[in-house]
Length: 233
Image (cartoon, rainbow, N blue to C red; front, side, top):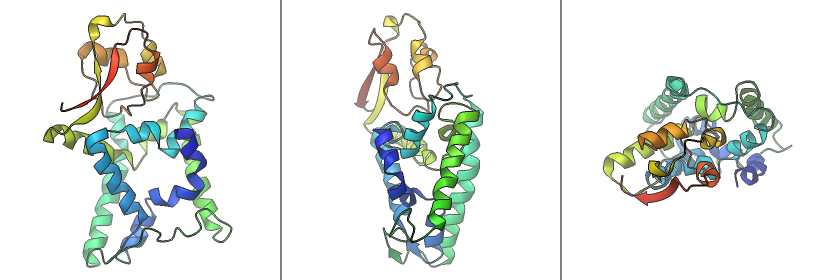
């Protein structure tokens, strides 16, 4: 599925644009990016980061690049790096809207008329700039490096998931029965987010914020140790 959405990326790229949302804010316009980021946050309240696992177009590109470099990347505090980009960006958006008198108009198609098109050659520079960034990180660091360290969309879903747990909403998540686990470690090698799935199973804590609910660990486990669940946590 993620590979299919990547093929649509030239059409939908600007609905996920961190730049276009600021450009619209300068004119008091809530662009398509505002709508999409808001929907990502709301979706995550009930379905966690499953959008990253099944729909994200850049996830699709990174899945393909695993054929080039399937090396696991580092997890831990380094994953907070993306918040170093995300927090100033979000603050700037709020400040610009505030000083401009708030949202005056909603225009979902603001500056997205042609997508990546010869009508606006600069769109090719933006598109290939994003592609080069993702390819560079994936090839040199490892699988889904962009998701771990740079992605400006994942913080919306990480915070949405945390809020959902606080509010006790029904939430899509992984549940486990560690008594069935043979500790073969295959789940670790299969996880696209380089998580120590076996350790999460042993601790019975499957709520890692970097988990994208892709289901790879479920599919690879022959003992049905891990399953999906959708209920209050």
